[in-house]
Length: 53
Image (cartoon, rainbow, N blue to C red; front, side, top):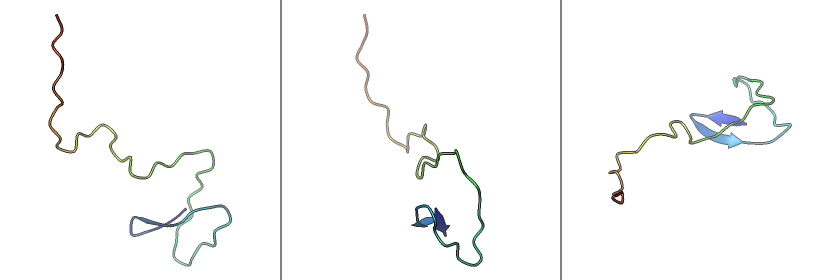
């Protein structure tokens, strides 16, 4: 995966690595772009809950 300025520029096996890029071996790892904090509420109000007896 090629990333520049926090934007994915390329994805796939055998990509040419441009000059100045850093190679990080992530073999056997997973990448989840956009899931920086999966437990955030983004400022959304809590949904009303049904009352329990």
